[in-house]
Length: 402
Image (cartoon, rainbow, N blue to C red; front, side):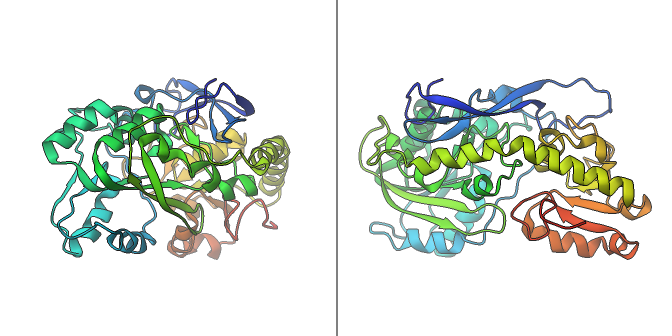
């Protein structure tokens, strides 16, 4: 296939995770039919970018519910805003634009600093979407040069444009980057934030792949990406976070969209990262299954906590759904439904103690683990244990002695 970044016909398959249902399609009944999508990771031999061999169409990702939401890390945003405000040409008269609702809290930070000329692309007014369930998966598809140019004409092109945690969802990266370029004035600045996959690759965390993410970047592979929109990089920072670091690049619009500009050949270490990750997949599956089987037989039942795409990846990719009794989650709309693929019932967290769970596997951000454990202290009081499904956690199931 042609690389989503550089266009080279050099994307080679590395890891086939199989066919799995979309993680946001919670089942109303245990036997509800499901549609599966192929999840195969490949890597471009030319630019090194890891990507889905078959990016999933946005139509297949629009959830059947309008109550889903995503939280992105914010600990670093004050620092990022300070960096932008200090750049030449940025004043309180600058127009600060944003692409999605994920950018609202960044816009709020600018407004608190006296920037009053702000706007954000809206689903209904700007993109003409009437389905309230549409979200990031649809916005990425509609972010094209033509459509964004029309929005810039109506709202006024941005001096600074905020684009957080959406670029990695792009089906057509060149259209997407050309689209955000159309929202920015010549000489203007774009701030793009994406997840850094380096740690997940190094730690062999198989919760990283997700049907909604077409692209999996490291700082090295992301560095030249915005040049395809006519941007010149100003700076790129990696902000350390407990689970998945954030890459933030600031770039200035200096030209027209075109091919990506790469100054250096791909470092061999990039292919080694994915090669090692892929090679360890089957051994990890076998070892995890043996560990959970032994625990279940000797100590008691197992549950997951957190009914999201991380739980789906863990149960489905690693093939351990049959060893898990249920998923605990206190989101009212999820209770009573079933986890896609695994078809595990979703119950309120009180069920952990009520049903005598002896191992609760946390399928949520590392920063949330202590809070969840504290709120569910009855589990530990009755002899239960907590572990994380994430390799980056100090209580990871993969390293914890049970």
